Length: 481
Image (tube, rainbow, N blue to C red; front, top):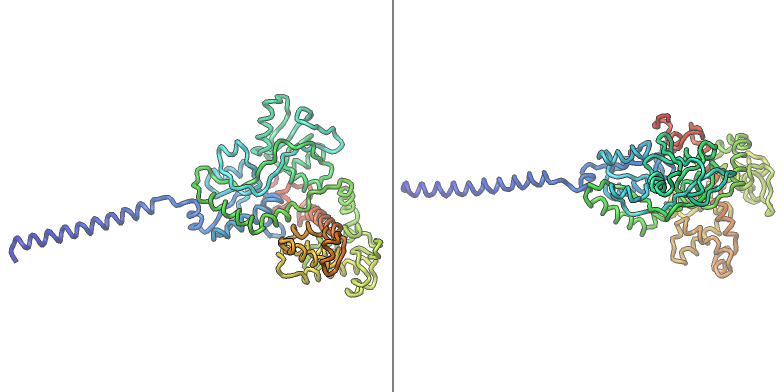
């Protein structure tokens, strides 16, 4: 081979090598650029394997009961994390300012704490789809003059710092310069209601849903009027984030709506708080203080796997904790057992408090076990309570009627609405067991749920009813105010 041929061959090899080097360099650069490209927010969460959710301690949002996490926002956030294929980590804050600071500082991916979508908040944050609405309600103490419009408000109004209520009052003060209000960082909304109940504050402004629940503990707080249109409640993300997580939220809530999950959770957290009876609530709280301690050891002893407070709530609904109670149908005692039921349960004396409580607990537990397995675990107790009042056969009848109406027979919210059908010949003629007092069972379950909620508040383990919600629900993690 000549020198010229050698040079030509070497040149081709150099060019070929240069091409390979250039291609490798381009691929490497592309890889570096791909690595430097920021991942979407959803991809970052999935790569991390954890969804971080900022929240507040609250009976509706997030709380700890017997070391178990509960709350409407917690349950939804857990399902959302599952849909992303990651673990859930709830990050509680102690006030609204701290909560939004978590999101601003990148400490959490989103906020889930019953936050309303307001004009000011929308300037700084993005909101997901609404999953319920609330009406802002002015609250005053029963027995004091009731203002019917903002111009009639006399006295101070206390609200939480950083709240939608503070935002609303700030706007209102431009129209009513004499309006007197203050923000508090050392309390929660329920504590502000307690201050009104005790006469330490003239008014507060809270969501109607919170007022409805809290009236079970403080019956002398009352709604004066609602302000403006209902506001949507939604999850919150940083405005600087991309659309990936928001898009996932939209599809998630649509799926939960279609699956009936939102309706089920709405029933669980709001379905029993619509009706409020001031006299009944005052009577219940008085007897819970004076009479319940006499029988509490018996409820605790015989509750089994049930919560003793639930058993006590059933007993109060049945007999007002009167061992000698009698109804016009012939049922007797603390748990109002029929003669046949008492005989089957080995209760020899229905008027003996311990025998009655033991028998009632066994009967309720047996009803739980006889219900169809398709009923969700957290709703079985409401079906069982309806059966306790109405008879299991009638409850199964209503499930069939619910299915005939192309509704979900395993959803308590839908079955509950169909209980009154047992009064109507058109419907009960199609059932196996016929006519029954369905409206009475509807009210029975609703009342038990309200009494149970009150007893959970009065007898939260290791806590003092005088503490704020945060201190009651998580006394070991919340610092003193």
